Length: 313
Image (cartoon, rainbow, N blue to C red; front, side, top):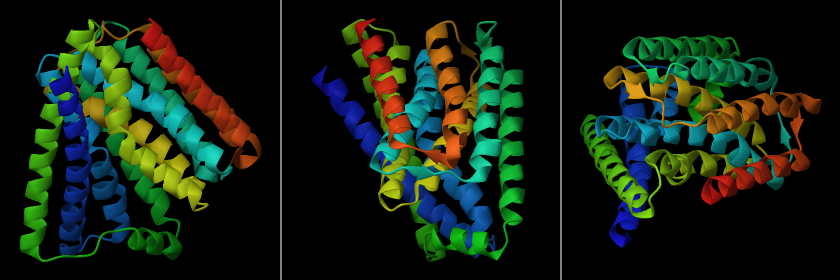
């Protein structure tokens, strides 16, 4: 058990560092090829920050633990809305941008409903994966076009948040180290999670919904907390909603394309909570275009109650 917990801790640490290293190298290399900061920000950086969830889900699916992969995605979405937005709003009330209210939050509800529809028959096939992957491609393209119409200020903002450009040799080294770190970290995390589940006599999906989901969401949590502390809470909202959409469409889409999954281990309670939080987020964000401390407290208490229910069950 001790070794398994050490594997989980080391795996999460390695995943976090490797993702940052890979983003640094890939963003710099993309600049070298002449891509604009906006394109890099919406593709390389946004995808790079979700790579821990992606690699862990693929590793779990290929290792025969589809429940862990599904729990990771569903649990991450629950944590994004209830835990991350809850903590961020408690730090400081969040002024919400119109795009989050008009597009991202309603789209998350639609995507969540679509996902539940796909798992209704007890499995996710490669055609399902193709549909989900096509959805994330369309979402990224639309987000890019929307940001592009935002004008020079959006372009400059994207430029300010990107890593600096390095030499070609250093870029290649960073990318190689990042990929190896992601693969190694994912293997350690999945191995440790499966062992802990067996030792505790619980299903891998429960470990995925809690330990793995929160662990792989730590980068998003850190980003959102820092953003809220600096008075940039809209970044926290965009991060939480965008990451949740990417989890269902991109991460599960690619995972299922590689290895179809049985969804029978995933309970309807967890799916209902995921959908319910997405639905609740819409009026919360729409009310005066602000996520208040009280609403943040409700979200955080909901998450603590949800985790308590899982543990007691």
